[in-house]
Length: 456
Ligand SMILES: C[S@@+](CC[C@H](N)C(=O)[O-])C[C@H]1O[C@@H](n2cnc3c(N)ncnc32)[C@H](O)[C@@H]1O
Image (cartoon, rainbow, N blue to C red; front, side, top):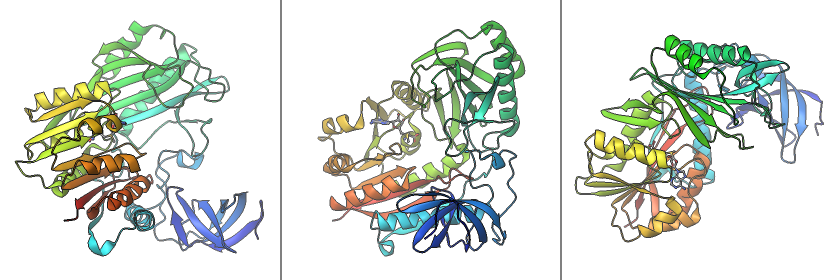
């Protein structure tokens, strides 16, 4: 049996997600090795031994995988948590994700693939610079303020980024430089997630390429931003496409970017994105799919699977700013959205009005609660697009009680999707169509759209 600090030489037999690691097996023990690829012979140092698996450090590899490529980002070697799959060529990234997703759905969702019209993993139209939203962290490296992303698995640490390939690169570099310079010039401290001290916490960048609009949010603990007039003047001068700049006050000890208070220092607190023919207004704090070009594929797939008839009523649970629901609205008689984020609801109502889709209405509230009030509604189709936690057994039971013919499930977490598919099966809804869309190239994540139909 291997022990901590042992060095072993083995062939990689598989690739695991979301660990983004090659898999080695020795004496029944599974060893995850970041950076290793299937088929390669590797020298590995055992770093940790857990109850069911071990973690290894890749010391060397024969690099024999035909799918290994040179990482494009200089920060990859520092362990940046942004693009963990960038050393793998893009078609193979998709293959790995697809294989993993199918395994999860077979194991947890007991999916019978013979009975599913399965479309595979569709690619993102772009592999790099595809995001319309980035959330960077401030921190402290000794005396110096830093700004960037956390390394994989080290929430307390920070990589001071000079560049990033996830959003438009030239813009990202400029924005990072601007705020790093501003913070250092005024001797502002970066927030430390361990001591919970420091002033500057996050830089939220939202950029719509379709509209060329830049929206910025600077998250801080309580306090005044020094020389705010000069700051906004400089921002406007340097970023001519800036549509708005806000300060977000967040004193919470949680690591998430929370909007406890927002101070609008310039322009608007929203931007616009266009998906297909729909113009979406999206507030700084509202959810919106981060891959604009890929989102068109996602919504088009949802539309195809939903196959809504002109006399049908659709219930759009977790509707956000109207995202997928508004995209479907031209086909339906009526769409009723449910959402709990006040700003997203305002955006959704505005978006319905501005796009002339007056058959789309929104109810404010938590789905778990509102679903009871909607039990009298006769919906033909229920669209669900929950956060990563998915639904749960109780919610699946309540949604099933509505008696819709079809449920269209959009998911960013195949694990919870698989679990919920098995719950829906118990209630008589069977998976009939499925497609994955790789909305997050270079990362282990992707989206799924599943159609569940009631057995007659
Ligand atoms: C994955 S997003 C989906 C947004 C939208 N369907 C779209 O196409 O852009 C999930 C949304 O659910 C909302 N949400 C999260 N938990 C909720 C809950 N318990 N009840 C209602 N809405 C919730 C979030 O604010 C977010 O807008």
